[in-house]
Image (tube, rainbow, N blue to C red; front, side):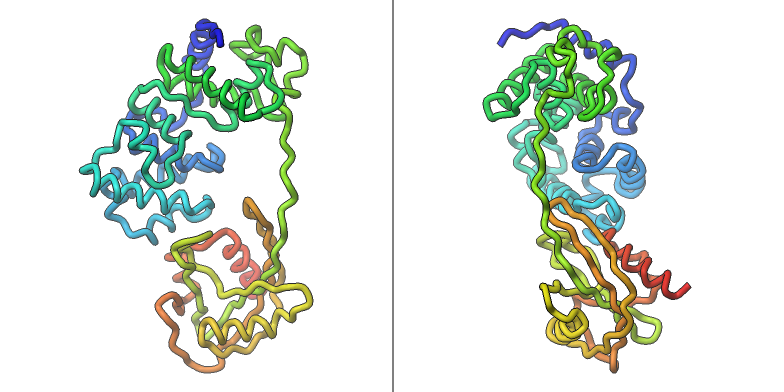
Length: 352
């Protein structure tokens, strides 16, 4: 594939004048750059910035992450979602300390072998922190290059074309800046549903722009409808305390705390099932009381409808180590999912 080197120069010239002012662009520290890339997966820039700054106030080095308690890290991550990112970063930090003597590897394949690191993050860190000529391709990069090349169908063959094209770009000069420049173009000019071609530095080299129908490139892939799960959750009170349960570390929302809950199938009585489940799984005998309302929460692959019931513990009972009785004033010491915070709001509205 022939490549016009002027395109890289034009993109870099534009980037030098228009790049976004982001905190992780003020450092060459691979730890900080890596952290930002992990946080930016599945999360918007404006959401990430305060989390990134707060994390670095508490954990200034990769060594401090490895020495931390996972519960503490999850608490700082709380609200950003996709908690496996945090857990993988923690495990990768430990591996760097014990396997690589605390030094973040600067070889693509070695770095990619760390937990949670794929082609995109490896390419981003290698190019930005170490100036190695590796492309980093996410949705923004794929869309921008597809429009430059006039690609409508993102097939395996065309994905290889996109990769090879970007690889040629980053091999010319300033690979990290080039990867970030294309990201900025995709975020501010060449958007999925809106384009501002008049402001694009490569408008005359872009086949989609020249076609006058840039939004047709690439074709939108429609997502399948995701299933809905119905659950019942118990806010179990005993005096001034409520009962919370810790999810297993492995799996979705692993390591987070939550209110005890059970999935409800069609036709099942939530009150009866909740009482039985609490007794079987938590060895607690409860009285299921008032229905406090329903919340909706969406994950990547399914939706959840959760009905919250106010419950009372019939008598003092011991609970295992995965459960705790805590006061309301102590809840901010534990990491919960957004869904559980919605449940807490239901209770608080009831008790205003």
